[in-house]
Structure formats: structure tokens, C-alpha cells
Length: 486
Image 1: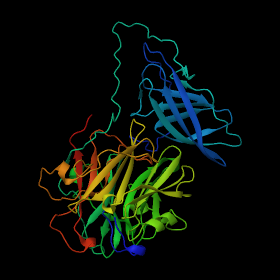
Image 2 (image 1 turned 45 degrees about the horizontal axis):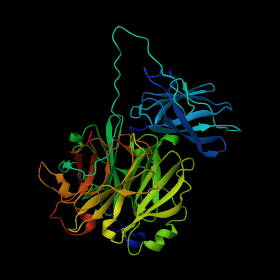
Image 3 (image 1 turned 90 degrees about the vertical axis):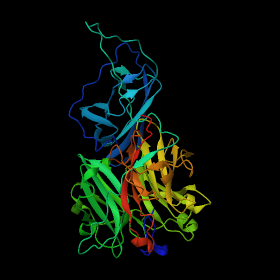
Image 4 (image 1 turned 180 degrees about the vertical axis):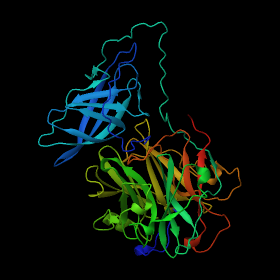
């Protein structure tokens, strides 16, 4: 997604299994230890941020005993703390006693394995950390306890360990592409010629797609459907009819921020990274007016390095302690700012160059960063312009959002997604695999993906199209991974 230098809206766009507001349940029964298993665990509890009346905490469980298939972690608060909102676990509280139960995707903890979850809570006065935890009824002391057995039955019980999402990402990718699924739907007020820069989330059985469109300037559009076969016929809602209003808006990203129980739509407004919120993603008219992330506009480090590029394509992603805001400059630099989970969406600072390339075309725009479900791993995608002038995606992995990033599939001969690793059963309608987003396994701020059978919604272009970049006939298509390892 490009825009004009000095922020004149001139051109744009090329570029959790989740804790969908993991609702607090009324009561949760602790799960029993596995049959014939020697339990053992250690717990790292960290208060990651604190403010008057509340705090955010992260909890990491390490299994030092036999493998666990299904877990409940319990502890007690002695100073009146009350859990309010959780992610990556289902958490309930009765009096002082707190129970956190696994999500569907992180039930299995192998020996030596580790799982994490987080939550926000209220507190009045002191907020001492709990010091005693039990996993499936066994105290977490850092060592393995005695073997426990299940009383014999007529037929021995069968224990099936569900496959965790993931395993590992492959070192190379193969894709099959749909035809053009989503194109422009002009009306009297919106004579648009392109749909581009998509963001997609699945909620309550429906896909919600947000994208840029171009009329006399850039605008945003929303469409929703239950199945991809309905994408072409689904109506479009132009978001200038909502509180987002008119003016330059482009390159959206949508996610649910669980601590606040709000949906966020992040986008470009020409001179800043901006956002709108709603409590109801199914009502596109309900989005709020734009607000800016950066109180003082473009950070100085970007001014110093942008050259003749453009400040574009904002991407937000959070771990259990912080939220990060990425952006590109079409000049070979990827930037990252940060704030605490408790302060979000305010307080973004400490802007750094997260990645750079002396060849600006190899690190151009449209970054994505995702949490890989079931692993302590993050996946980064970034769009490049190839030696043939066509768009494609590189990829890296890291143990944290802050890196260090290791190349995964990042060359033209071994790309994450490019025309040369994509088949087009219905005919090759594009040679560009450009600005898009993976179809996530959840909806929340961790941007979590299941690496099994990836799907990527992207913008493509008639190879014979030419002319004014803003008026190029971009359409949206869907890549489906054909070499999934699981």
C-alpha cells in the first residue's frame, strides 16, 4: 500500500484458535491427572503491567513430568484480585480460588513442553503475586511427583492425544489459487475500479473482509459471507458511511482486542497510523471516528530513513505483555514501535528499525506478523518486488515479536508465496501475489495462525493491465496451501 510523499493521498496499496474474547465461565472442574502418569510442573507468573485498579499478568507452565493431555491450573488470590478477561485459556474465579483451563489448541503439554496464557484483572491496594500453583491437582514444585494410577476397569481406557495445531512450518511452500473472488461493486457515490489490501477474520461462522477501494480517492469497504463460494455475490458496505467518514483511508487490518472487548480496525489516513473501534463487527455502520496512534506524527527515526519512500501498511500484534506496531517505508526498512498491553492503543514509542535491506525492492511493504499456535514462534511475511517486476512474499520466523528473525522461505526460487510456487487450476489470472493476510485461526490481538493448511487472501492483477497505479484493476483471490505437513 503506497501513498504519496509528504502524505498526499496519491497512491496506495501494494503492497486465535484464538482467544476470541475468551469468555469467563462460571465454574470449571479441575481435570484429573493422566492415568499412569508422573505429574510435575513449574510455573512462571509475571505481572506484566499495572495501573490504579488493575493489572495484566502472564503465566507460563512448564511440564517437567509425563506428557499432559488437558490441563487446569489453579491458584489463589489473597488480596481481593479478580480476573476480568483472559486469552489462550478459559479462566474462572470463585472467591479467592482461580482456575485456568486449556484452550482447544494447547491442551497437550509434552514432557519439557511449555504453554502460556494471559489475563487482565482488577485489584485494589496491594497486588502480591501468588506463590502456589497446582496443575491437574498436583502442586507445581518444579519436580516430578509420584506416579498416579487409574483404578482398573473392565476395558482399559484409551487415551487419545489430539494433534496440536502446528508441529512446524515447512521450509518451502506450495499453493493453489482460486480465481478472482472479490471485485469492486460501484454505486452512485463510489465508482471504484479496484479492491485491494484485504484483512480477514472469521467470527460467529462468517468471514469478515475489509479492504481498500479507489474512487476519487482511497476508501475502505466491508463485506461478509459464510463461505468463500459466496464472496463474489456478497454486498459491500462503504465505510465512509460509518463513523470512519470520508477522506483518505487505506490498507486496513482488523482484530479483536480481548482486554477491552473491542474490535479494532487499523488503517492509513495519509499522515499517521489510525484506528477505529466497535463492539459489533457484524454492524459495519458502528465503527468509530478515526484516532491516531502517534501523537506527534511520524517518528523521527522514520523521517531519517524514509528517503523518497512512503510511510505505509501498519500492522498491530501483541504478546502477553506488549503490543507492537509495524510499518514500512517502500525504501527497504521495516519499523517497529511498542506499548504495554495495558496502555494500548496509547503510548507507542521506542520506534526502531526491525529489519532492513539495501535493495528496497526486497523489503518493500505490506508486513504481517503472526503467532504460530502451539509453539513459541512468530511468523513474519513481507512483500517484495521481484526481478521480473512482479509482487511476491518473503518469510521469517522468530522466538519473539522482537526477533531475532531467521529466514524461512525468502528467495525468488524459494518464496513464501509467488507465481512460481502457485498453481491456478482455473487459469492464471495474475502473476502478482501482493498485499494480503493469512486466514487466522482466531480473532484476537495475538494474530494467531494454525500452520496446518494455511490460506492467504491476497490481491492479484490482470497481467496485461497498465496505466495509473491507483486505477489498476486489483481483485482479491485466495491461496490454499497444498504441501501442509499436518
